[in-house]
Image 1: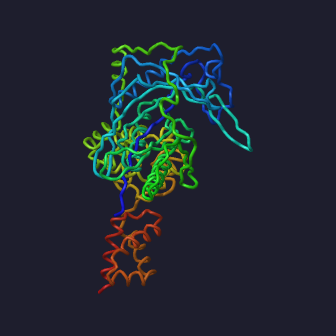
Image 2: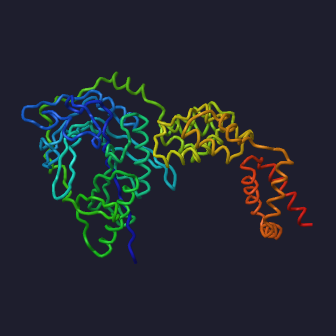
Image 3: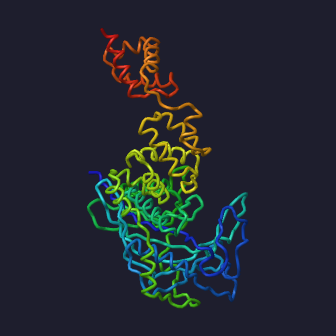
Length: 482
């Protein structure tokens, strides 16, 4: 009998915090890709002898905000520790982090799965500093310390995930929450949020935990799911032939879709943690924590429930709209200005609007089309001033060049015509010019009706009212059947 294996997955997420200065010094936080290398550094963030760290209060505030949003217990006292290891991008030879007394513990995040809502337990949320950035070219290695010392938040789950899709759903949900809270830009291409997956497999039905591997620095939802999927298959194959999975740290090659070994997996004792002697315990005032709680905005789950109840949207449509705060806010502003139903507004935003956003690569927050103009256009289509295809044409013009919807419709001559004599002329010509399609329709291929509607729309340059067109086509086709 062939054994089946169950994956056990835990995630660690590292998110750079949106502060103006670094974690323990006053150096400016800059874009690690566009900024000139090694320009935003000082003795503290480059680990010079005698330099002393001073904690960034804003970083602590943002970390508390995340802990509260994840329903964690915020500890009024936490301890910074030295995590000792030697790597070229770590100038001090150690990283200031938190270990056995972190800022926050015991939280949760709910995700959607095929079998329903699942709770993923959050083990810990703690503060640390980011490392420098290594790059390699022509047999040389280059180090940029601009990123060294940037405030970093690490969010660690319990091993509650059981499939790549669950890990992807968790990562996407957490990504949205961090954006909602305005603590992280969410720009994965720039490495400001990175995922690390701890993966092991065991025989289905057992409680034994086998050796795990850690896939480091995954910077997209796709690579996260692919890396986990490959590792599950690799480990299952090893066990199926009687082998042992080595506990190690892995990288993931997106081009090959495979993991590769980087080094043996370290345990906590390998890092020789001890309390950071240059920083006192971090002691928070309970009233300050509560003041941060009062500033929390409506988060994705709550907003989704409200969209379902207030706008009569189905759960899938509501979750799409609340996946990004800027998208949810834009939808609400358009819906407030439109006389059309929220469902119609959603269909326009999810369709032509998002197609433009995705193809142009523009951020929704940078869209210049006002909600008032978008609402006006949607209503012009809903109430048949213009047809749907004409509405799409006007929307693209508005997104690209701006302007007034009514003026664009007038200039382009897109006003919808319901005059039967005008439409009848086009209907008659279309039926006369397409005898084989008429014959197929009369033989029972009634799906061709929509094709005929499209031909009339093309002949009238989108001006013909589709409902009148459909009525006249059916009438004309019935007459030809006699």
